[in-house]
Amino acid sequence: MPILLPSVTYLGHVVSAEGVSTDPRKLEAVASWPRPRNVTELRSFLGFCSYYRRFVGGFAKIAQPLNKLLQKETTEEGCKVSDKNPSAPGPRKARESIQGEWTSQCEGAFVKLKESLTRAPVLAYADPHKPYKLHVDASREGLGGVLYQEYGGLLRPVAYVSRSLAPSEKNYPTHKLEFLALKWAVVDKLKDYLYGAEFVIKTDNNPLTYILTTAKLDATGHRWLAALSGFRFSLKYRPGVNNRDADALSRRPYTTEWTQLTPDGVQALCQGTERRVKGGIEAEAIGVMAAAVPEFYCNPTQLRDESLPTFSRQDLKADQARDPLIALTIKALSANQREILLTNSPSGARLVYKEWERLKMLDGVVYRRGPSAISEEIQQLFLPTKHRESVLRSLHDEHGHLGAERTFKLVRDRFYWPCMRAEVESYCHSCLRCIQRKTLPTRTAPMSHLQSQGPMDLVCIDFLCLEPDASGQGNILIVTDHFTRYAQAFSTKDQRAPTVAKVLMEKFFVHYGLPRRIHSDQGRDFESRLVGQLL
Image (cartoon, rainbow, N blue to C red):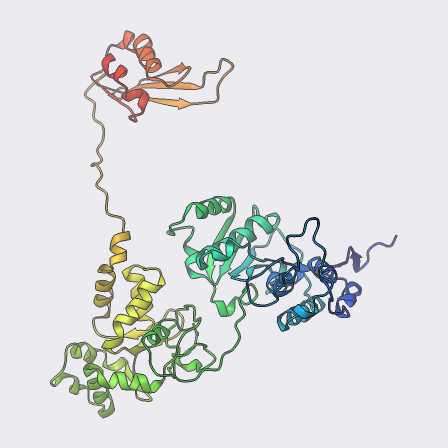
C-alpha cells in the first residue's frame, strides 16, 4: 500500500495538504447527468448532489424548485405537482413523468447545481488554534451559513451549511428567522467545530446583534439563547451587500426610472446603502438599488433597501425652494452673502448662519458637511419641513422604536435642520408606543447597614444546602450573632418551620437566651406563625 502520497481519494473526496475537495471523477457524472424524466431519477440526482452539499453555499435555496417536485402538494409558485389519486390506499407510486411540470425554475436549479458542484472550492482543514468566522443568513427560502478560517491573510471556507424551512418556520418574522439561522448553524450543524472555541458571527440583520444584551425575547428565543450559552462568540453586523456568501436572498439588479414623489418616497432617504467614500458622498437621486445612481447615498449607516420607491433631484429642488428657511439659505449661498440670513430671517436662520462654513450646494440642492466615523465627511441633506415627520416616523417607528439618542444618530447621518436633536427627542418621548412599552421606574427601599448594639441584639439565620449525607440530611441551619460574629451550624432533615423552631429552641436559645431581633431572607420557614410565636 503506497504511503506519503500528496493526495488521497477517499469516499468520493480528495484529501490533500490544501484541504478536502470533491473527486473529479465523480463529478464527471454530474456534468453529463441528463435531465430527470421522473421522480425516481430526480431523487437519484438530488441524493447524489446532497452528498457534496457541504461544498456548495446555499445548497437548500438552489435545490428548492427541484425539492418542490417531490412534495405531494404545494401552493407556492414554481414547480407545482398534484397526485392523480392521493387518497388511494396502499403506498403511492411515483409519477411516470415530470416533463409537464418541469419549469424554467427547475431547469435553472438543475443547471446551477451541476455548475456549483463542478466548481466546488477546496475546503480548508479546521485548525482549533485559529479563530473561526461564521457568516449566517436567512430568507423565506432557507437558512445558510459559511464557516471560515484565515490562512495566509485570506479567509478560506471550512464548511458550508444550509437547509430549507419547515412550513411553520415560514411564518416567522425576519428577526426570528435570522435568530433561527444563527442557533441552527452553531448548535445543530457546526457544534463539533465551534464548541470550546472563540469565534465571531457576522450577520446582515442588525437587530440580531442585540440578542445577547438588550433584546426582549419570547420563550422560544430564551430557549435558543440558552442553547447558545455554552459557546463563546461575539456578534457583528455585516451589510447585506457584503454578506453574499451566506445570503439566501438573491440581489438581482433592477432598472430604475424616476417617478413622482409619493408619501412613502421619503422612506428611501432613510434606508440608503452604506458607502465608505473619502471626501463625502454626493447626492444624485434616491432609488431602490445603489447601482442605479450611486452618488446619491448621503448616509453612512447601513439599512435594508428592499422594495423602496424613488424620487428625483427635481423633487428635492422644488421642496427646498418652497421651504422658507431653505429658500433663504439658497439665496444666500447663490449670492455668497452670509448676512442675508440675518435680514427678515425666519425661525432657525441664526442657527443656519452659524453653520455657514459647512453649507454647500450641489446642482441646486443644499447640503451640510458633517463629521463621520466611517469616512472623512458625509453630506447631510438640508431636509424641508414637510418631510421631517415622515423621516422621523421611518427612522423611529419603522426601525424598532429605538431610543432618542440612537434615532438621532440615524437622522444625523442623513439629514440636517436647525434644532434637530430637540425635535428628535421630542418625537421619541411623545411616541405613544414607546410610552406604553417603557418600563416604569420602580421604587426600592433605601439601602442601609444593619446595626447591632451588643450580643444577642441581632441574630441572623439562613440555610445552607449541601449534598445529602448517608442519613439523608443535607440542610445546614446557620445561626450568627451579628455583633460578635459568633456562628453555629446545625444539621436538619428539612427546612420546614417546625424543624427551624425546634432547632432554635433546643440547640441555641436554651444556651444563649432569646435575641431582641432576628434577621433572615424572609423565607416561608422563617416567617411562619410558629416561629413568630416562639419569639
